Image (cartoon, rainbow, N blue to C red; front, side, top):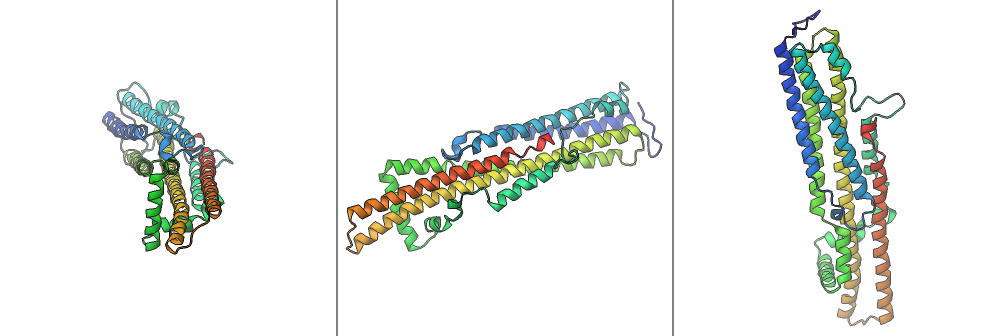
Length: 327
């Protein structure tokens, strides 16, 4: 059928079919993004055994993100089917717009409620301010630094730590439990960052498609359809912002886990180096003094491990409050 306009060129069946093909291509990109999301591992072990509720919070965020993507995918599928029915004369454009009057929610929050973008910005700001990091870890960089630096002192400490972990099973197991799998954490963050960029790209392409196909088409049905599809454009951007926030949160958690590991190594290195230096200087360490130093080091190690759990639990609370798909 041909839709007559009060201004501009009329829309013919081939125009609707071409637009439907463009929307279908965009929908398939969303399908591929969802597949990528499903392929990202969910094993909490990569964050170590002291990550608190952070893996569970991430999993919940994954689920909510996928629900939002599924609704976007369904919206575009309805639009494709509707455009094809309009092209064959089985439906009117105005009827299509009226039937497809729901969107998953994006920037258009109801009065008094923050938009998805505002909620995501709040989360990113909170992560950047590091208010979620326990005080012990906030000031642990000086302890961890010798384990990372390239000086003679750091080399001695690293050698001592390696010897200690090789000979003390409990210490080696503790470091493994704290560390998890940092390369996998980095991979997950990179995946979510790439998904975020793709979602922003899909949103821009959908906006350009609507502008190219319907700008200047003065018809009530066209106006209603473009308005509804604009909600999907904003929702795609909201999904992109949410994916970006996930990438930032995962990176922040991974960095803190590595900092905790290096802090523990630094504490062990301090203890071992002190004993080595005293022995080299013919300053025997009394058994009671050595026992006290070991007890202090063990206490500090457990304090930092607990600080990691507290910090990641605090970060989990931030993730749990960021419901971009319920705006």
